[in-house]
Length: 354
Image 1: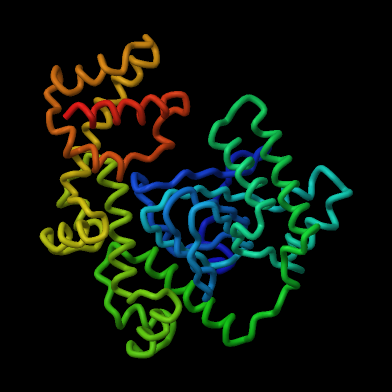
Image 2 (image 1 turned 90 degrees about the vertical axis):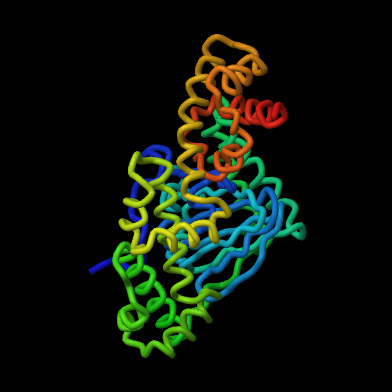
């Protein structure tokens, strides 16, 4: 039986440094944060735009500068709006290993005897400063950044205790707990079966509800219809496959539960704002771009020279078209850290040249 305490079960970072960092903007295939949960905690900061976050049954909107904390096992999702945000997923038990003086405090968080506030705003500037330093060190990865990460996490927890930025753990009512478990079961069912033609009857049966009651329940919990959520999941999977495989658009459509290619293309454009063909063009452009970016990095060539090569020698005069698609699909983790800055400057150079 699946562990309903987590649906993401994998190593975060390394054993010695168990922190997993993500930078997410519209270029990321998982730009929309689908419902998920994990045994680790998670901290996020919003850099731009807004992020509508749902934690179990509670929803709120975080804006640029805000900090979000997700406790262990909490079902959560995020809907971005012109948003750039960053996340760190981490194992709270890491902080129980090294310092016995801090163990008593950290155990209260780990055992959920208290719940850290889930949303920090401009009203808590001390938290913002600590968290910004934490994320900046991860983003820049200067020598010794690991020391800053550990230090700022302890700083963050110290501020939480020192300023009482937490609630005493409140037991959920039996009804609340049951609804959350049921939603987790539905999310798990969709993750396992999204590639098949799932009906509303099958979704409702997975939690022993009538279709009518299930639709109301799902909408109350997620603020979207069951079929809308299912299609969004299918499109997110298809987007990853378009950007990372050589499979045809038709193959990917059928593999992800779409039996009609034209409907797949319409649905894809509805959620992504571009067509699957744009993704394929962007992937070709990515490989050509990276070849020249590597040359730029190795030979310290001029940015304008590289732009000329791409725009004219390789005949990529449609760079204006693929630029938008490239930004939506290329994952930052696919680019070596030292080259990331070159990519952004280079793309701006190309974009201004057409």
